[in-house]
Image (cartoon, rainbow, N blue to C red; front, side, top):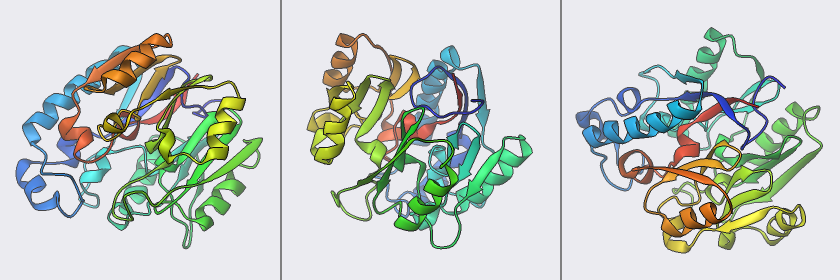
Length: 290
């Protein structure tokens, strides 16, 4: 497969968006942060420093980092490059966010992919809405989709049709209400695949059948404690099998990963991750893994 149908294989090519092009300036953040439901107003200068640390780790492990351009048609959340598309082995699926403020991101992304000659295998139409954070490749042939406030039944129907030749198992997970419609709960909020047999999870939010399925498949579960879940401890980006990146100040999760044989890189993510509820998986759209 040429493109990305995995969450944990060696990351070769990734799409990101720089805070210079998403946050724009402190003045812009001051006007927009409440509208986008950030926890508080991010500090622009600090965000740039944090992002350089984040990029430094990426550059050590990823051959090709591609930057989305600035656009007047999108807002602060475009920093989280994972959500408007999902890659399959044959190319990208263009999604449409369940968060109305983010829906223009798909249009901008589509144009960008076309300019870069990256194939698009499909696009959500009509009433369908879905975020990339609700789609998890459990393995090369198993796609898990979270049905929640950001991803609806019609999107799931369309995605299933688009991927029918690419997957053997298509599993739908009903997501809980949790903190409500305004908050962002994705499937990837409570599971990150770090290897074919290692996942970081917050079990309290997981349906029983799904947790049992992971265990039956021989996947070891790293359990993120409640306080670290709220600091995005469950949001872990695999750079390669058992080589991963996470937001700092999640010591229990980090130690469990190390004990499981993983190498863990950390970045300070208060401004770019915590305040907008988007960890390293949200900041990156993996294009090629092999």
